[in-house]
Amino acid sequence: MDTRGIEQMLSELRSVSQAAQNKPVQGGDAPAGGVSFADALNNALKDVSAAQKEARGMAQDFSGGDPNANLQDVMVNLQKASLSFQQMVQVRNRLVSAYQDIMNMSV
Image 1: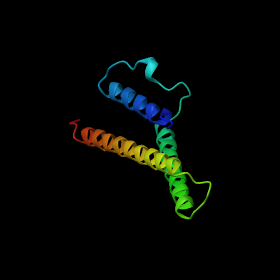
Image 2: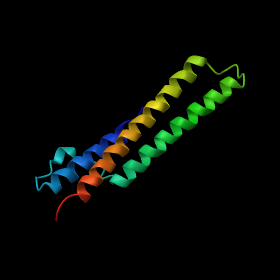
Image 3: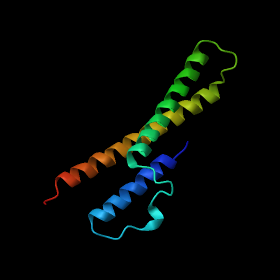
């Protein structure tokens, strides 16, 4: 599973958090390519969607009796898709929590 998009999101969140606390932003946490947070999140969502689509297709092939479909591969891909979805849900939960924290800040 490719976690670069999620690592970039976490890096962006750390730098925004440090900026919000008036701390100097560490140069090592910033993404080298300058990818925006929205692009990183969008790419991560697309990766999760692609993993789910691939796993669903393999499961349909196996249940349809395709001789090239291997049960072990189907189960591994279904678990990978499930884990990537759970990971994305956790990222969403953290984003919602961060948003709520920001909204509850007194100005």
